[in-house]
Every structure is written in C-alpha cells, then in structure tokens.
Length: 500
Image (cartoon, rainbow, N blue to C red):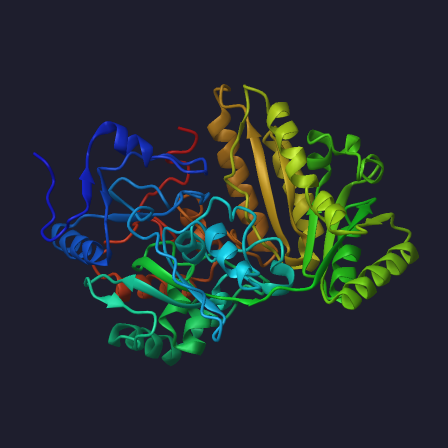
C-alpha cells in the first residue's frame, strides 16, 4: 500500500531504486531508509513534519549528500531538499546578503555574489558540490577559516520547519520554545564549564553562541537536521578583495608546524594549511613542478595565503619571506594569480595519485577525519595519531588547517581483511581518547553525524551532554528529527553502516 501524507503534494517513494539512491553519501556510512520524501515547497515540509510527529516517523533531511559522518542517511524517511528548494533570490546589495533555498549548490550562490563584487569567505573546498543547507546544517568551513571562521557568523538567518510543523522565518521573532531554552541555559551555566577552547567546533550544539545572542539560527546552524528542517538561509557577504597571494613553506619537522602558525598570525593570513608527510609521499608531490623540490626532504608543507589590497598582500608576502628565511625555512611564493592558483592546486593535483596508490584492496574511509585540538597541541595530536594508526596497521593521508588545529585524516582500510572492523574500532576509540586528553573535539567542520555521536560523552563534560539532551528534548520533544545524530541512541554502534 502506498504511503500517504495528508496535504503533501510532493513525491513519496518506497521503490528500491529511489531508496538505494539516498542510502549513501560522500562519507563512508550507508543506511537503507524506509521511504523517500521529495517536498515541492515549504507547505509540503510542514505537512510532512506534522504527520511524522503524529505517526512516529523519523525524518532525515538531505541536501547534496556531501556530508561525511553519516548525518544525511538514516533508516526512517529521507527528506530530499534538492528539488523543491533551489530558489536563489537576487543579491541584496545594500545589506550585502543573499537568500537561497537549502538545496542550492553553494557555488551557484557564490557566483551570483561575485557578479556583484561580493564574496562568501567561509566557503568549503566542496562548494561546487555541497548545498547551502548542508553548509549551514553542519556549520561548515573552508581553507580560509583561519581568518574568517566557520559558517555560523556568516549566516544572517534561517527558515526552518520546527517539530510542531510551524515555520521559523528568517525575519521572524524568536518563538516561545527558543526563549524557554535560552532562559534555562542562562539560569544554570554549568554546561559552560570546561567548554573546549578550540578555534573551530562543529560538535554538539552551539549553546554558548545561542545563549549569548538569543538568535534561534545560532543553535540551528550546526544542528545537523536534529532540531528542525532548514529550508532557506540568508548568507552574509563581504566585498571581493583586490588581491591574494600564496606562499608554500617547507616544514623540515613536525614541530615546524608551530612556526608556520606563528608566521600566519603575524601576517594576519587568511589561510594556514598543511600537507603532512603521508600526503606528500602518497600524492607524489615530490614530482610536482611547482613545489617538488620543497617537498622531497620535508616532513610536510604549509600553505599560507595573504589577502587584501595589493600593497597589503605584497607586504605580507615580503614579511613571510624574511621571517621564513630567518627561521631557516625554505619557501616559495606566487608572483601572479596563475601561480597562486597553481600553488593552491597542489592538494587537488595529488588527489588522483593518492586514489591510485590506495589500490583496489584499500578503501579511503573518513571515520576520524575532522578532529580539532588547540593549535599549540597539534604536534602532540599528530604524533599520537601516528602511533594509533601504526598500532592498527593502517596507513592514512593527513592534511588540514594547521592554524585552526583542525586535521583531516583519510585512513586507507583493507576492507578485504577479516579484522578490518576491529582495526577501525581501535583507531576510532584511540583517537577519541587522544582528542579528549588534548582538550579538543571530534569535529571542526563536518559535524558529529552517526559515527561520532556515540563518542560524545567521552569528549564533552556530563553537564554539557545533559544540556545537549535538554536542547534536543525542548526543540524536538518526540524525537522526529534525525535520531542517532549528534546524540546517540541507546547502544548505538559508531560503525553501523560503515563501509557497506
């Protein structure tokens, strides 16, 4: 018997091909849903949420499916927002904002902004694939997060369908439920004690931001579809800058990462990235025509970008050159826009080589790919990570945002080996213990999803976890939205659906 939702005029499906299409994402988790819902407009989402709340259905919002840790797959009803929420409003030049449907590919919104000489600085590297709704739901960030941070401060407001089926409008007033939540958080702030002192965080709920501002959007950004369904967002923009230039610094040892971060701070760099030794070796970067000579004998490379007026950029690169020379570090800088793109492209040029070297017998499985620690503890994290991977007999490609202490790790898992799950579990638990000991969190950009949710209580204080649960219970009292994401279900296995 076909499923039916009163007042829903979009598409509902339980056909095997449709369910297979939404059972996977860019990440390593796969789950077969019970049904697929493709709403055509806001009224459809309202009708779906009200019916789901009455019937006990679980809803998993889904955009472009570029998310990594499993927050966009689930066993209930997957709500595909890519078809009905592709509207792109004209750029508001006076306010420097643009409003976009949750299903709009971010690059499309950015292109519209750039035609008006405006930019969206926190854009992730996946902007050609990810949706505006996904960027907002995960509090995503990109290579320029060192200066501009993650998405949250760049989101002017959100439109969302809440648990009772009512709509939170971008320009609307805060609802009573959010006011109750904020008063409760402000009345007892034990949850704030021991809050991780990191530059980026997309784990848990953004209680500190919401308690300070009272803006519902601040807690909905980064909530991974667990508190409501985002249908439209307002992105804040800033004027395009006149110039950019990149410098690549050879890091002779792991400890030289700290020097690179200090340099980035002194020149007020927009980006401070690193490519670890495993990345250089597996990506064949030693043969790269632009940076091969820097990479051959190095532990890693740091990539720093200066932005602003031509004079500011020149002064920044000149200062980097002087200070790098003073530290005995080799460096290469771009002389023009073409060279800037070329130096930034080192990471992308290496990716096909890494994929080829992984071979057919190993799978790149990003189950520990997003941890963040205080930047000064980054060498400790990378040393501990290497030990854990060695214990598990796993190779991994390591790179990330040095200035933020945010590391991307792509373990290469031999899924044909009978013990591969044991080795993955050992690595996940070992990295969780390591991150907790360094005062970090398990996600700086991509969210907890399903993989990291069962680890939440090992990272956050008991008071913070209680506040997270209170937030979920207040805004989603019957548990309609994305159960098992951020907050785990009883007995939830972090490896469920992994590698399927």
